[in-house]
Length: 100
Length: 93
Image (cartoon, rainbow over all chains, first blue to last red):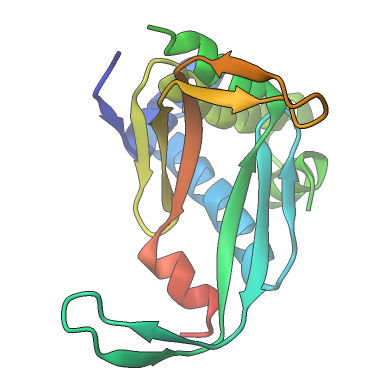
């Protein structure tokens, strides 16, 4: 099993290899894909990428939390959280690829 | 927003690219993330989030319909953690 961490640079390198644009333009395209996904989510939209997965925004209501170290009660304000639900295809490929 | 709408937005911003190249670009990005996780690698996209693989231990499960116990093997599942910048933006900061 690998332990590598890929970054934007690896994604733009893949785009560069695959499509043959300049490295600079490949990097910009990776950035705009991430920006469009982020903007849609910030506007409250769900983002559904077939055969990859679905990003959705959920509203969490306020609750009383606790500082696990001190035991002190702290209010947790209502907030929006992002969840990612992988597609069946992704789950299958990740399970198969990491099989012991 | 779905995949084809995302492709359309990128295509609109890049009129010098063929539509089919934009499709390949977008597919390559998502493929690369999935391939990395299939190898057990992480993909860290600062400000956006990180994709990683989590191990789920083998366990004794139960068929909820029949109550029968079944052995569930160890498996690996994809996981996404939202980046700080995006989390802040979602909450209007």
